[in-house]
Amino acid sequence: MDDAKAGRGIEGIAQDHTIWIASFAMDPKGRVRHEVLHALKTMGKISPDEIRILADYARETGLFDGAKEKLYRTELEGRGWNEAKIAETLDEEAAAHTVENPRARSEAPTPVKSIVDKIFEFMDKVQTALRVKGFMSAEDKAARGASTPANDVIQSFMSGEMMKREGVKAWM
Image 1: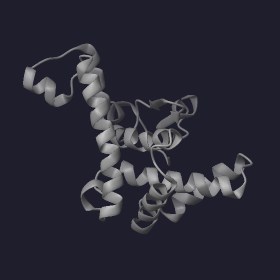
Image 2: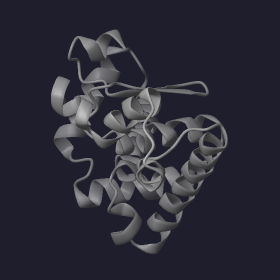
Image 3: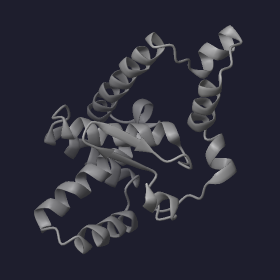
Image 4: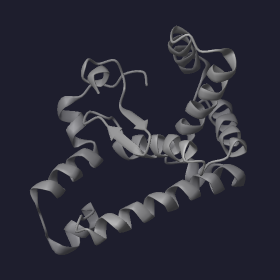
């Protein structure tokens, strides 16, 4: 997260079974979906074929254009990675950019939409588990008229308000 604080463009990280999202993320919900894709791939819940389908869509629609791919490639080459690992990582990043886009669920062709739906279903299960633990969504709060410090921070973050007050969008 030090890179994020230094403005190096990192809005989120998926590491093992943990996802970190920067408080200045431009689209926190989209960034969570992006990082969930990385985590699900690490856990073997998204197949290489599904990654390829999402990556192809991102490249075809400009969600992951040549300029963005070049930035990622430069970073990955700087790590000394071989071409096979770079290509696999670029496909995963392109796929994550598809999942990050909320329109992919409604506007994408069926194969893409089916994979994106799978990720949304996973996130719905996480949201249900959080509700069982007492967390509330913005809709829950509005229905109950409830406000707690933790829920207020979560809502500020997920709505993007925190970013509007404090952040700067960068390339990643």
